[in-house]
Length: 235
Image (cartoon, rainbow, N blue to C red; front, side, top):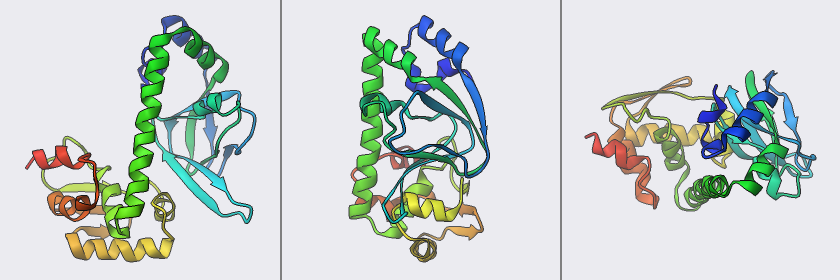
């Protein structure tokens, strides 16, 4: 993976990117590996090279609140720069993964001296904030089957036409946590989604014979046209 092509690092200076490349380290993580804990002192930020990384916080009774689950190409830990140099969440590998560790110090220096890069990072974080706002909206306005439907729509290949085949990227229990529901609620909601939209479910494999039907069921309770706009345009 060439770090120069990563979304977060766009508009970084050549000097900065070269320095990052020299100090980059690939870490191999087994499933369940804790990379750091909430409020640990932060020295590095990370890029997912392969696998899936869960970002979460824990309550005093040990209950986890899943903040996000990140796949290939996604960065995490960089926001510690704006959180008094401590991580605002914990990070765990939810399957065997490879991640690239990069010094936060270099990122901070580039932000201080490269205005164009600073503006890009601000836009990047604003986009992430918008995505989180949409997740909050979905929890407020959509029922559980509709939330699962939106999750599936985001997994559809944008270049696909007509029927779509999806393999769930990680465990259903983890998907339930990401969507803000209990595993038993997720199972019932997935069955209801099947009834309402005609999707076919076999284990972790899902087939959508008519994505438009799923879009119409889910997106009436969503203020965003993404990803539905592109899919409808293919009809």
